[in-house]
Length: 182
Image (cartoon, rainbow, N blue to C red; front, side):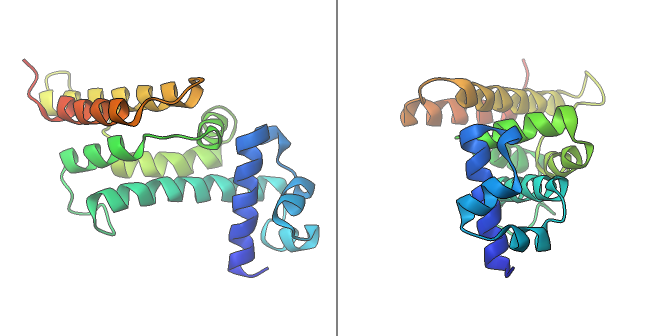
């Protein structure tokens, strides 16, 4: 299976998870959705676990590319923490059901997949402060938690936020992460 077919299979797998959940992911479902043969899928994904891990990596990479586009450079190296936090906040909006289900599955059931997501979090997201007195680290972590909360809200809400409301919330969260704590 050529790389384009591999990507087509991963896109198909993402659509299945989006529509039906992680438990619906099977070779048969992905083959039918992507118009590929089961043998072609087995070539790149020898087991369902390999397919699922590749899907985690694929979706996490897409999310990280959103952050890369936000900062306008190919690497996180050399970026200050406020810039990384702002990119994380902006890229964490407009979640889809597949992202939610995959991150929940990774956090609760799949150690290898959890490592994929944690790699992105470690590169981009504000980390838990090592000291309560570190005001800068605390405010960035508050912004991360607020962004995660907005992401989760949008993942489960039955209607979408109006774009102008979402934009205002995102900018307020970023400001929260950059303003001094009184």
